[in-house]
Image (tube, rainbow over the protein chains, first blue to last red):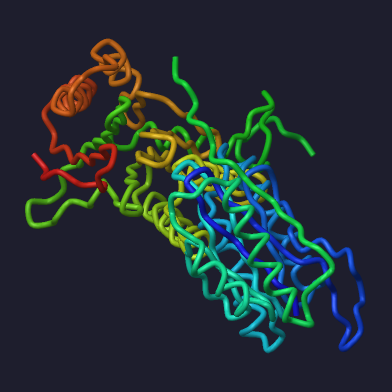
Length: 191
Length: 219
């Protein structure tokens, strides 16, 4: 169930999601937050088992903070995604997979990134990505509207359209849209 | 329990409140081969004296690649140095597995510091080796010295081993922030020669911004 989208832009990244939590044929919640901010520069959009995703995000958040304190600068988006993927992979190998497909999006010193990380532990870097039961519909919109010159504002519009399209036809998605944009780091001026 | 009398009977603090075994380890390092580290913003070099052995025996390697971007050297017992080098290599590869990125020099120095510090808290023999780490990471070129106590320093010039005071003097006087790689290599060799009063074989390792760690031929 769920529709989530992630879009990389020239200004940063944008994440979008619907707000429905399904319990079988019943709508369990209409106000679920599927976009979790890890910190100011990284966020994760969740599709799948919410409890599993919450756990992975909690661990990733702690590890990321710890690493930042220890080495003095933040983990890159790829490093963070690999960290998350390693947790997912260890679950898979222990026959207790985390039922999640996550979109990890953020900015670091070499720009903005969107990664898809699934329960197998695989990660792929994408310009735009979608996940959840509504993703085929969302991809249709993304494929026709995306180009790599768009701004965060334009990407928000595209994300909104993509999630809306999915909500029209996917019974697992609905009840409104959440959006989150993260802007690129501005280069520090060295005096 | 009386502390006075034979030092070393009680494995931890001596009468002056010093860690006797750690002091001894540092003393062993001070008898090791003279070893230099020099860093500027663009590069770092590590040079170590190779002690002559028998003509038929090949002398031990003293400059070690830790990962593509980091090299290390040390002074002290070669067996201890080699073991520490291996823990550094292991930690570098662990970082690659966990984060899919090369480890930064600071994390590596801290790991080594923690590792060595363990040997000062239990009734074991502290490792008789000081290590100099040189590498290039996201924060630029970095140079670290880590001592048997677990103390570590970040800086632009280090000397450890035999007559290291004299060697560090030479490095300090000859250092300039805009020196070339060639000049730094010569300065390191000069420092080792001045400290020892002879011209030993010196092995050198180089890290340059954006390039892999490399070793130069012995001369």
